[in-house]
Length: 358
Image (cartoon, rainbow, N blue to C red; front, side, top):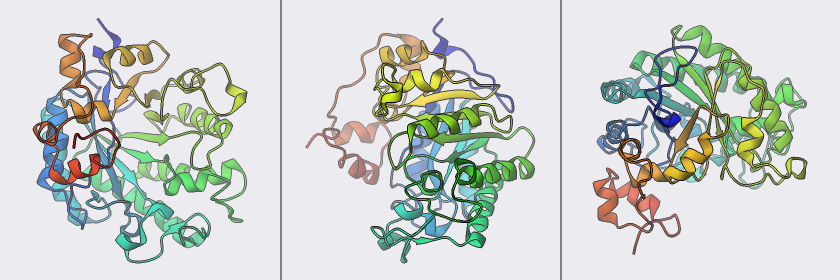
């Protein structure tokens, strides 16, 4: 049997029934106040029905000022708990783990969406972002923790902390965007401090079997690959965590940093020493063959994004035929609608070159 079809045990909580995880995908579908919409509910539960072992929400913002895109799901207030509860229950009814990704866009929050200048680790002239005060950093930390508690109350199996793709936590990690002189700036240990404090708070305030993961990404947005390796190694040996999600852009590409020449990004991170924390990867895994190729390395699961948009039942199709041929791009709007995407989501996908047929 393919490793992808075998269960995966975490340190805490329920096991995944297979090694397929739905990526947290921007989709523009929820209400502008962050309340879950029927369209986003349909999109996510259809993937749970399609066989994903873990179904993850899009990035759910933990502060109103941290909103990163239109129609973004929210977890910053108790008004969101009802929708989140409905979603978690429906996902779990399909035998899938329900996980919410928690997010703050920082300087990547569009000013025309949040109605004010965004915030970041330090001032940023290009985005007009202002530096958070130390007290405000503490508030961000506490709001991530409070959002995790809401997801726990809503019945989710766990949450993932979004520390990748140049969003706020990533802005703290990068020396380019973090020029602070307090305890949250300077050394890598200090720049990582906010994430460590959030992890600690989630562990102390959520139920004992609540699963906790982190997403990191290398190379882009001012992240040095060597420092990404150091952060990943730290996460992989942090018993407070259950999994690390490495978003690698393209898992099979070589790193830009010549220090790692001769290895793919997948090989770099799969080769890191780790304890009980499970490791998964995302990045242009679009076919059964590429999924198998990725799993031939020392990783525990794969995350599907575009492939899951195109075929909600990718795991079921793989279980029936490990050599099935996925649908080719571009696809029509009608095709995507049949796959559970709303008009808003399809409009967003139309901004991706070559994805939606004219």
